[in-house]
Length: 337
Image (cartoon, rainbow, N blue to C red; front, side):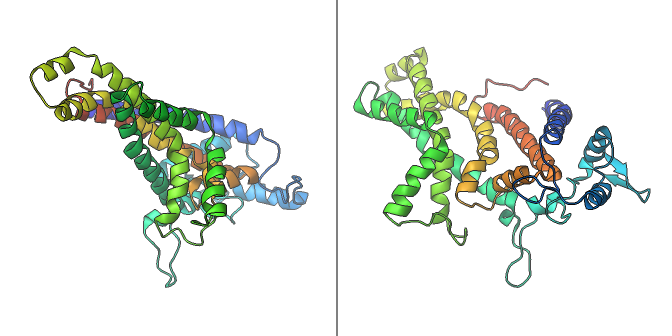
């Protein structure tokens, strides 16, 4: 087990290097730059631009900029500045040189000047939103898929398939607009842009919109898996032994039908955390996704690189976590050393 974990974690190194290289090449070949002053991509004067590039090391060759970010480099004073291995994601070019790690992971201060808990940081907000969206998807999707399979070819089954198909095919920003019109404009139950995110009630709508696609996919996958398990010999044997239907469904059917569903849960959580750009922007949510969109529009290179690499690590760790959940659900599965 230990050898397997170490080997999988070591594979993160080439993954991070490849993701970082692709991101670096794309963002440096995109029109515009971090010193643009308006939407028309007009830049500051030439002397100021050269001074800023020299200060942030953007006047160096591209390969050296990449090495400086991913590993480290010597500055103008002859001092070695460690890069990504030391947790240094570089300075933000559009936020007065504030380190990217501070923007993403440092929580704001309260009215007394004391820092709030970590979950008030941009990363904490996005992580909480993703966990809440995944919780809604699991809590609704698995029961809906189970009931639809047990009530196959009834109106319950057809209704669940209709909802699941709509959730998969309709983009989440369309669902967001639809729900905003109903609950915010029509019923006035919620505020589209709340003044504070301290209340759980203001999280329900963005979390529901974000997790609706995962909910629909989970329901369809659970229904398909349950229908397959229903036809297994051991289910007929369990019923022939006189076990109650509740025991057959809960103990024998659901547990085995969950294995394909578990396959998507780890990547789904990472996808919900990393794929919340549009939802966070629509609801003015103070998370990483909104900051990432702003960084792209402002060509804030360090912010783009740092956030992209964090997302890549989250996806890789989510995939790794699925392997261990397999073992907990099905003891027949063993991780190869």
